[in-house]
Image (cartoon, rainbow, N blue to C red; front, side):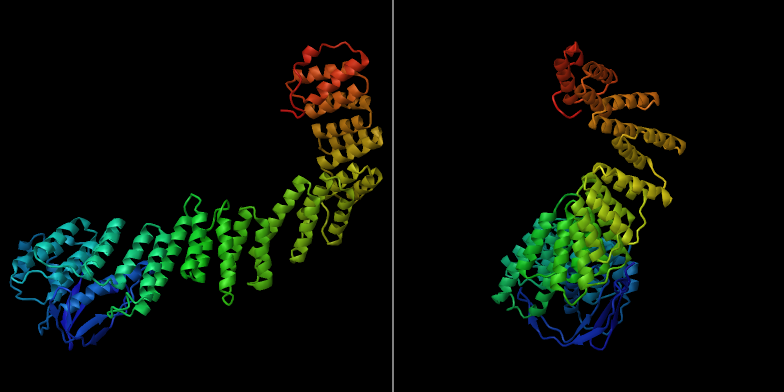
Length: 638
């Protein structure tokens, strides 16, 4: 239950509420004399003193500008309506006794013996019921006041509209406005501000802005709360552009003194608050855009530029919070990079958060913008803050990905540059990084480069692994440096590195290239004894080298051995062997192998087909080409 109390003070009455403790207010009383002033409706209100609450409520920063300002206007109205009294009224007890009231008769039972009560007592109870989400007793109190000769006045109705807003009893809004019209009570700026706030809460944004137009049409002077509520409409619509446009027009009117002529407010100070408010709105709109599934990157970047044009500048903290909202690598990296650039340029004396930088390094990696991630790491080294272990690990992981890509594509020069880049940034390459570059050199048949990388790896204190030796052996084999390959192999065995299938396969190619088939046979037996079963790749390596060296007979022999070991041949096996036999003047055997491959369901390319037909014609072999089927359309299989 909303607890309210009114106590007589030296200069007036103090209205207290549990709301203040709920909002964590630091409240104290300020009493000041105010002069008689004239309202817009021709009536005048005169008071000798005024009592205010100064509060700092515990609310979100976005809503405080509207909520606190709106509440302040309501309090000021209540205070302006106070009648001096020396009586003591326990509003808490009075409101508690009315909490279940549903009709004016229920209210009459409680209040008929109370006599005339100060107007602010009714206002306080009505607003309190609203805070407690009890609109029914609030409506009942107003209905009861209608029976009195004086009836409810503007302050009572404004309090009731405030209760409607607080209790979400929006269905009563039109009825209250109709009652005011019937009673001949004209609304004031507080009425309109409250009505705008109600429409905002209902999601009736068009109606809220229409109220703003009505305010100016009726000749009222909009208050800061009016403009804050209008800006809140754009926030709820997630229309950052609209909020900026509204504020820019408002500022232009202020510069022309069309607003500052109203002396009730310190507009210079109010415009600072409005500017901060519109900046906050734009920040929250952008954050909402960033957390959506759809790609709104362009809108975010455009709004940032429009904020620049409007002179609205988000704080460093808001920039960083927006960076944290960037999590999708497919497009958020563009926003993250722009925000990072702005923080570096606009807040040079306020060091950027290291955790934000690490998040950006991660984001750039997720977006496959590894060079951009490395640039951020370079900034940390040169401008600060000093990178930590997480920064280091993130960058190392990016280097690993880049080197892995270089390895897969055989981009050996790129790999060498990346190794140099790592060393320049104080990042010690590990074995996997050296190996990636070695594999790239091997794939590119860059034997000399592979040798240099292997030497540099050893000189930098990294122990070569079986992958390192395998890549170097492959590069030496492709360069036909067979003697050097033997030396590397023997050194690998000497230092205790157990060869894997890849290393054995490379060494099989080396021995085949040298024509040392006795040693090759020994190598295969050693593989089996160590539990390393030769694969189709191993046999293909031997068959390919034989074919390349014009040894089709040996190639066919190893094909037979492969079949005897029950290792399934693939397309590469058949294509290499068929072409070798055809080129060696054995079209009939090549033809039979082609039919065999087809019988096993393998799809060969056009090259072996053409080789068989060409060899048959050249050597006068009798074959049925129709059995080979139609010539494959493409050189590549599949």
